[in-house]
Length: 139
Image (cartoon, rainbow, N blue to C red; front, side):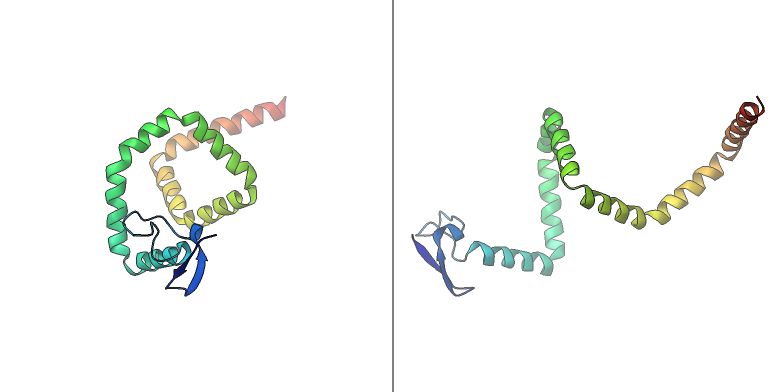
């Protein structure tokens, strides 16, 4: 078992705990995977604008490939999503509730606007339904 020293956490760790780096003489990164993740997370938190630009650039550059992949593998993706929802029912329900509460105001506003624009049509349909109920109750 080969080990390497991580100067960040000051511990000797197994070589499998380090990312590969072909530019280094030993072929592995200077710091361990755990410290590397922490450093990257800290950087992203301290530089949100740079991270947003990097993310946008990547998205713009790679969008076509993702769209093609999604189109070619639609069945596989749908099956994976179905399986995830089945395996994580409680989590999915909790997320749906959270989103429902988060967007409640916007949904209510959209509903009110729709009602105002389509008031006559809505009232006409309601009258038809009332008449149908009266007709079926009276029979």
